[in-house]
Image (cartoon, rainbow, N blue to C red; front, side, top):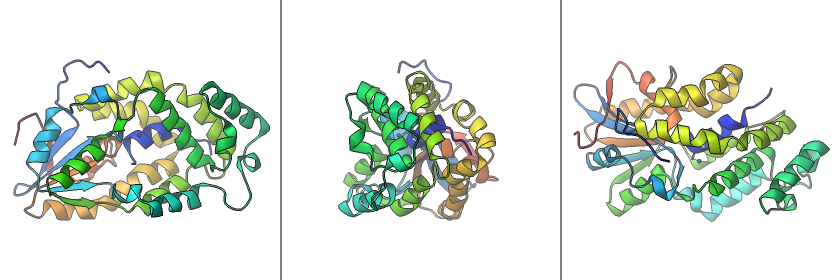
Length: 295
């Protein structure tokens, strides 16, 4: 199976815990969901942003102020612990004497080395990374070069919620998120890294368009540009990254909507649109774009 690193790079930013804009028709990728009695808010996030992306669209602040509980994809504090860092290294790096040289062709190693050198880095520092971890690293390096060095929507509200003593919950454990990453590129490691090298070059062109769609609340366009082809060409990976996780979240979300405390659920923006997106799977409840200052 071949993989689409662009989809993986964007998934990092838009689905797991990774611009000059015109005035949008909607205020943001924030939705008010109601069953007639209770309400929750769902906000699509980008996990990394640049300083120029702040302040966030007003609809995010409105949803935050109307909510007693914040719900994230995972425990963001746990991601910063030494225990998680060790678990990540155990699962995503070679620990038994192997290295990338055992997985990748000489041509791919040469291309990787040239790519790293062009960015002032040495491939020797990354030879113990498994391909999935290396792909994330290549994407992160490129995003940082593009100025995405600030905390994303999730981390911003996570920290704000702690300071404001809001209840904080999450949908999956950090270890579950690691398991999703581990599956990327398995069985086709060389092609995976070759495509990653090719596609990170497109990020400067693609990312501003996606950020524009995100800020405008135009998730259908975002989905069509980044995931529609990926879904048909790589259904297994699409299922791992998006649809299976969305389905797993439904029990929690349905229960949350049945209770009086109002939740603000913040998940990667690409979890929301599409036939198997969170919003569609929550039907028959109603949902609408939340405009700034709406309650």
